[in-house]
Length: 267
Length: 304
Ligand SMILES: Nc1ncnc2c1ncn2[C@@H]1O[C@H](COP(=O)(O)OP(=O)(O)OP(=O)(O)O)[C@@H](O)[C@H]1O
Ligand SMILES: [Mg+2]
Image (cartoon, rainbow over all chains, first blue to last red; front, side):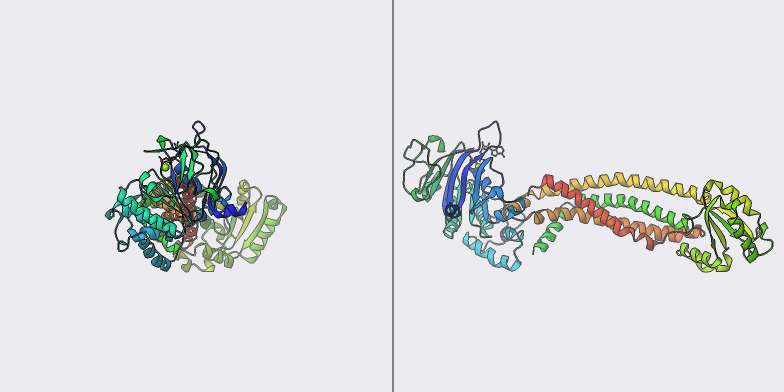
């Protein structure tokens, strides 16, 4: 199915990840496809495997079995010296922002371009544009400690997308922020998604998921127990089987294929 | 752009780790000075060996103008005397002890003298007339020196017979011993330098793990991530090598060239210019030690 592989920006085929032989797998036979331009939430209790999923996309770790495709490419087949090229196509945002404290806003964003050899003039043109997209106009010269948490996360998002990656991975980007600020960040992510970037966001934040009404993939103990379009944080309709983990792109927008929405998934 | 970026990273790395960088510089400086000192001792030994040392063992000096030796009462050696000495050397009684022999004329003696003492002021005050002609003999068995000495010392026209080796061998064995000690100390110091460079790079990688983590995530190449660390070690080591080179040059120039050559005018010393051939060797040695040691360290402590 070459055309499907190409349409899928991220595709997991029967992926299992075992960190520790004695423990249960962090991901267990996960089949999942996320299309180009899609916005998907990854939800589930702590330890359910959300971060592991994102790490496998980045080739930060290798799957124990199964295959991970990113933009049609099997990441297991990417040689180590070409991994940087894979990562240039993926932006990442974390809960703890990870800004460089001794660089100002502009320099933090420019850093991501400098290290991949972008020219000074391209940097001068691109960075202000991206800062505008994330709503930080006029704050170029602030230092990270002079910014609120929400503003710091906007800088981190700007840095993640400044090289125009096809995919943006966000691991609990609103985990440290209050609800209002979180909604602001979601607005930024939505805008980036509107511009064509595939966004995958791992979160515990039910308000946000319920507000956004995007696709929700729920993990439990490393298993996909729900994959639902325009969904809520917790599924309202109890479902018996979990036979269709591999999402069928054509039948995604309806409400068939519900899986047990267990209380455990709620906070 | 990437180059400018790497350079600025190196600059900030050096500044942040200043005390460690200084200790790397000092340790490589000391260790390479010992390496260079061993090299200089060997060069000095070669200088003192002169033209003949490795080729022959025994020299028969012939009488010249100003010879005061008893055998030279009859004035400078005559062509006939020289002829008969040559014949004696070729006679079976003597020839059985020697591999071969060569005649060194006054002009050749002057040429070899000039080469050996090129760094010494003495060269200007010597003329070919003052230097004796000689037969230079390569012995089958150097221990048989006595036989040659007894045979030739009393011959007319012979000023003196000298066993060159005996004169210098002792001194050379002392100098060789000293260069072995220098190499030994250099070896220990180099181990220190390697460990210190490894520690410095590890600290540096640790203190910049935030940066390198971000670089990894945004897809910076391995080179861009690692090069600043490697060059940091290499630059410190090269500065140490440059200091060692300067020290060795200063020793050759001021100690050997000005002090020792005044004290021992009849000894040939190496010139400060000759020590310059040690400079590229020390710099390459220092740089590659640092490069290899930081590369191995980074493989363990910096994920890329
Ligand atoms: N590097 C690792 N080594 C060993 N086990 C790990 C490692 N990383 C994760 N795990 C384990 O894998 C499982 C999934 O972890 P993961 O970080 O993916 O969960 P998560 O859904 O992101 O949780 P959270 O919501 O708390 O961030 C956990 O049981 C965890 O202990
Ligand atoms: Mg996580």
